[in-house]
Length: 189
Image (cartoon, rainbow, N blue to C red; front, side, top):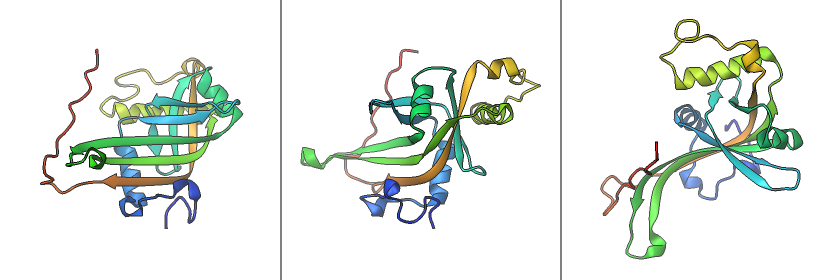
């Protein structure tokens, strides 16, 4: 049974043949380099923010952090319902008709409620999860000073409690005729 719960319309897939199970979703969340948080302001305007994050499998939540004040915080405080997405692109799959061009892809969408973590112990835990994920070779107290209470007061840690999720993947045969990879985007840094 899916951790999303049976019949959760938010996680329903049109192409069920591409749907992935919960174990695959957990693995993809552990591996994705970054994600996108979707919030909505009081006027109904949607916003997306790209974020580093850590998926906490035991607590079935996602931790991320941003500035102490700003749009993310005001949106989360106004409407706690959020979506969070991670994705990866594979090869382009050309066809004889433009409309039939396709792409290999994989992705996860998480639906849940977000909150600002007010408890200092949980905030420090969430931040450390993020640090451990992106710098596993560095250890607090050995390679850098552990986060202090003053530093915690300068950031906002968010927790997304996962209520539903879906994962899907499209993968073509290895010898798909003409398949190719799009070059990485040239980033100016």
